[in-house]
Length: 345
Image (cartoon, rainbow, N blue to C red):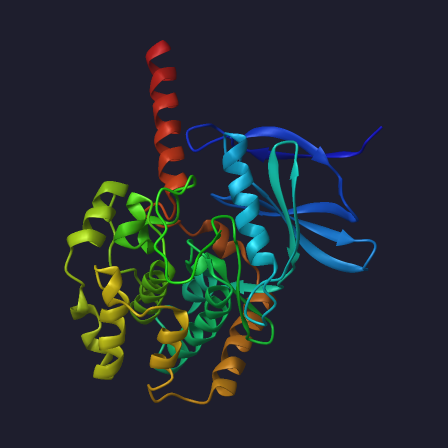
């Protein structure tokens, strides 16, 4: 009899998680314990018995129609061809019982979200290091004509050496250089980090540039520039809200950096930096402490976090604004189900 493991997976944004059995073995990988769950799916530990290495196994939430799952798988396969020190290596992606299963490099460290929780806003040199190393990874994607589409703090991982790794390619898509893709089957992302055009299903390299602009703003201020209680509120702010540059003034940032942030977060796609590489070159012009010094600082943060109990994390409240479209829709669906249950009582 085939050995299986039971995981909780949603078939769609409005559907509650339900137990699903998948094989304990995917190819040469034996699946282990649950490492974490999020809006995109669940991550489990794994061990590749053929190659003798630990891996991470991500099972994405159901995409509904088979063609949607196929598109997701194709996007991940495009990212899997990229080998770069600042990009999490994807070893394989398979469809298992209608679900996309990704086997990838296991990064033992912290996400940027975790780092910001522990440190609060970053100083100038540390913020520049974080964004520059992230941009190096995204530049590798763009050079391979891949758009990430879901850059956010939870998808930037830092290992024990202080190196950044861009991860989570569940929304990545292959892209014709210089083109402007629209009408994608899978429209999604994390509203706080989505460029205005993404809410209409349009993606390009500049969409990723916009997300990195949000990341830089948040790293410096401790909060994303546009927050709201609903997707429609956040969308309206991205489309027409004034960039709250007053939040940057207490930091006394170089004017050149403020201009970089303004350009990266421009409402009009065509007026942003063309790609992550262009943004990276602009960031390199800002005076900063040596990268190796900043790398060591990040390594210290990661090491310190792994040496203390994490009970405080479990007790800390989550963000007041849903970080992903899936989060907000799922939350509303759950509220409706509770309301119906109350009516029927």
